Length: 137
Image (cartoon, rainbow, N blue to C red; front, side, top):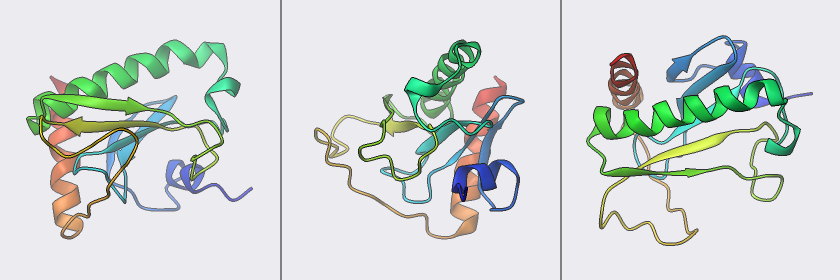
């Protein structure tokens, strides 16, 4: 099995970590809809939400809530968009929850997801720092 998210969890692939807990890991999406777009994954390889063990479901929801709060308090977003794909449109076959910072008039319409980029590693690291700080409050 060659799973990019498992490789990130093992630290084989670098990522801008936002949340690092025993059961879950969150990191910045490399192709964000908007800067600060976070992916939350279970450390254990779980292909889809349907296959998530019940013992992890409460933790997944709680971590998603904390990240949704962090994009508001840490980045100044007005809200967030939270989504999970199951198989269709799931670019990595490992359960992941998208937490995308939103502001009114940001241009996101329906399910058309334009992508942006970080200027460089320092730019993405700064966003990750802000989110980690917001999670500590």
